[in-house]
Length: 292
Image: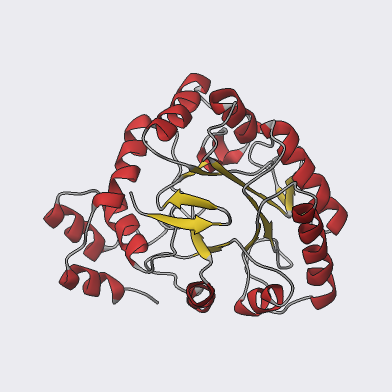
């Protein structure tokens, strides 16, 4: 499988996202703990060396499962987490953007994963409703957040600094202060609003990790997998619609890293197989034309 640098790690371009391991709504324990553990172990057996997680998945559930399944960790395994959010007792997603909250989030990730150092931690930036990319940069807050992340890296708690849910302006400001290991933004076949951020990542050799590449997990009417062109292409090539969409996403740029998540062993193997799917030029061009 092809690799790309993520900080000091060279990771396979198809990794694993732990978001689907906890219970419904990314809250509470998994429906089948043993299956969740087996999926994690099988992922590593199949060559996955990049696992994306967060303390607020569960909360703490995804991290505890990763620790139970994989600790002591392989030396080449890049564990990447994120800070900037929290959950309340009802499972609602709330911002946690204060620099002190970011520091506590990093320390909680280290504790629940039982590790001294993470490959990278993403600072997830929030707008007022905690969902969309901020339309303007709060320069004072963002620079204080960056200072906290830089301090954590300099102290050896994290190997690389990542950013998530950002604008191109965020990335330009950050690059004026420090190296950035990775960026996570929503990006998929029909939603390419993060294209300016992706272009900057290509320019600076930064790993770009799209979340919701199959459409939002919180939108039952997501148009990605239901797209007629996607379905026809999948039928023509003998793959699933999800595999076609993921293969297209990998083809966008060499710095794109996928982290599809699943709690199913069968789906895990389907997801990892996309690394070997090469889309014919005419089909890729047709899919390219679906972007909004």
